[in-house]
Amino acid sequence: MTRNVTTCLPKSAQPGATKAIQEIYTAVHRSHAEKAIEAFAKTYGARFPKAVAKTTDDAEELLTFYDSPAEYWIQLRTAHPIESTFSTVKLRAKVTGGACSPAAALTMVFNLVESARARWRAITGAHLVSLVRAGARFENGVLVERSEVGA
Image (cartoon, rainbow, N blue to C red):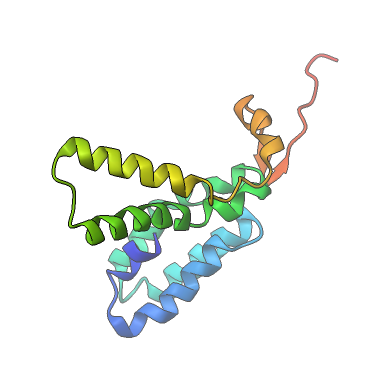
């Protein structure tokens, strides 16, 4: 999202906007993130409405990760695992001059991703996966206990 917003801004406004966007996605609670979005809109709205619209229109989707366990937030806030995996493939493709056929390309990509998998970081809070899959609710990263209805 940071890249999408900053492309709508002139180079001189990008460093300040990047810091303001970081305030949004590094906030401790959803309410703090919502206040940061409001501050961003107030600061940049008059001069750069297109950039502000990209933030405010997608605010609900942007803040969805607050409904997941706090242990997952570090992985949800970064695209680095995806980028590092594909950088391995990209580098090897440059060195070899590309693949001769689609089948060779698929084989090369599969083997590179398989070898890179050994260096991947395990998910933080793996013990919470079963809760998330079962539909447990989290607010601001904390499990919300269900109250028994009719008890």
